[in-house]
Length: 110
Image 1 (cartoon, one colour):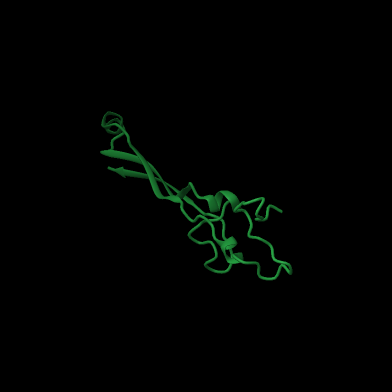
Image 2 (tube, rainbow, N blue to C red):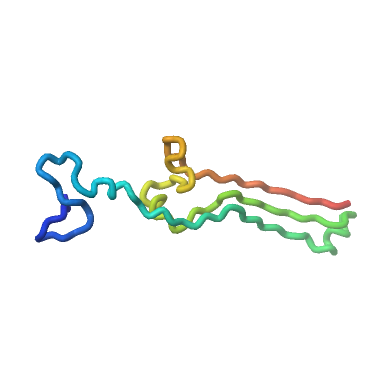
């Protein structure tokens, strides 16, 4: 193991004690970088041109897609544990994978 010693001054693991029971700074091993960037909602839409819509006897047509929670970016915690949502990690005593949803829609005015 890459323990701290006077000849190996690394910060990976605390210095081991003789009995390995409650080594000093053990609690700091449970900390992690909790920063992340989450895109909560992303919507893309397209209005069909009026010339095309008028030819089929309508006033307007809009096609759209909405994604809820599509991306979690720059999360060291998620990158290490593959798929865990940093906002829900540990809240219920279990780590849940990130979820997302997609909605497709069509708005038509006659």
